[in-house]
Amino acid sequence: MKPEHRKTRQIMWLSGSWSFLLIFLLFISVSCESEEGYPQYNPPSDHTISKDGVMHKSGLSDPAQNCTDCHGDDLRGGTSLVSCYECHGKEW
Image 1 (tube, rainbow, N blue to C red):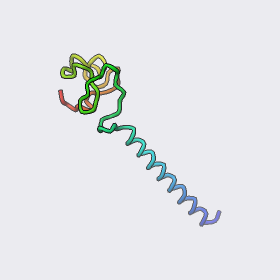
Image 2: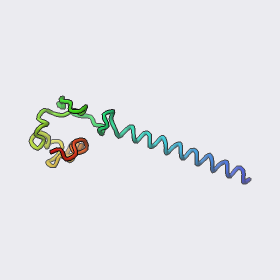
Image 3: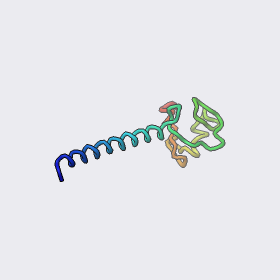
């Protein structure tokens, strides 16, 4: 193989790799965040109260009493696999 062809193939491979990496990073950034900047989720139909654009179930002012069935005793995911701390931090 001629040296010119080898360099051309290397350049094509590198430009293709960068393109793939850029597209991958763009996909990850879009798929992980909602428009409000919170992680995307698909809340159940009983989550009818919007707080800062994120839907909550009634009783959200007392999460230890009202949210632990789905989000776990420590509110870090439970069966819903959605941690309240992703959006609320250490609010409670």
